[in-house]
Figure 1 (tube, rainbow, N blue to C red):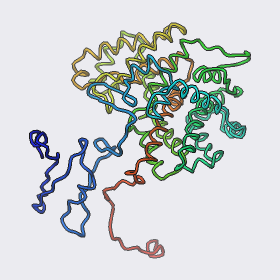
Figure 2 (figure 1 turned 180 degrees about the vertical axis):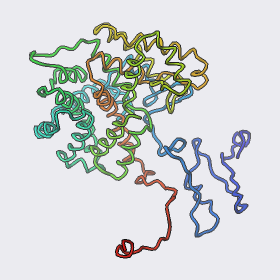
Figure 3 (figure 1 turned 45 degrees about the vertical axis):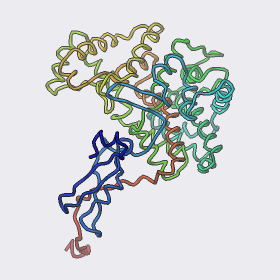
Figure 4 (figure 1 turned 45 degrees about the horizontal axis):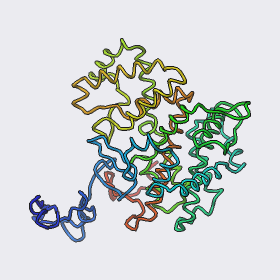
Length: 439
């Protein structure tokens, strides 16, 4: 491999690989800290044999795309949207401005922002047939399943969405989806409670309108506490994108077939539905309730060390430091609990975090609180049942999914997703007709 001095002298960085099967050496260019899988494919024992491939379950060390949307440094605990630190966006921006940033790649001017908000607000209503579609679900249907199905169904209401090569058309679908997600999410929530659906109130802000559709009953106007609206806005910002996670990978993989964006995002919702991706904050709540009191924490910690308990909400596939989103959510807790009263589980969570961060067992393993550790406490304080947690996650993640999808469509290097496999089954078997097998 080219050393630092060679690179400094102007030589291209490369990796020299010796194939011990043949004795042949290959010089593979290193670009952006990666080598191309296609270059590895040139390494083969014979011209009629398949080239070398990489076996990487879960893509733990494989880059599937080039992206300018989100930057993460897991070792340092850094998260940036389009180059802007998440801490600054959460404190000084709002969700729709962040959505504009993710989609367009830069912050809006005043005129651009006002036009963007107007577009989003104008498209919050859904076709009345969607209402009938959602009424068709069982009374106990999971809100996330309802959201996934209804987003996929939108592709049939907007057949022009398949014209993905038209930038104006893509923009229209992006606006529609960001605008309608709170409506669909709120209606899934109301359906589960047997309450009538509430139409959007376009005089309200994005998050205030969402809260109105969720909780409004007989009052003429719903006035959300501004502290709760701000806290929800921050939560949506924190979930807006997170690089190539499971659901974003699903959106890109399905989107690579050049399907309409509603179908691609529905695939992302399906991935987020899984407990290993979107449901971790619900697991944190169950853990805290099972612990019960601060006095039980030491015994629980010992149970984790002995492999008898699982510490939920700690550790992350990417972050090997404190998840920056967890710090911001922890701050948002104060505003929410000022309105709703302190959740008794908060004291358990804070004490558990304190003990874990001082324990060498967890420090050595770089297990720090992640975004899920405190978010469930806020959602519960806002009167959301656990099955709604992933719906809120999906609404916040929608701009990120769409930004990644939009980037994918315009990326000339992208191809339809079609990973290799290592075949482990039988070969060249001889088929025996049924009458002989059953004789």
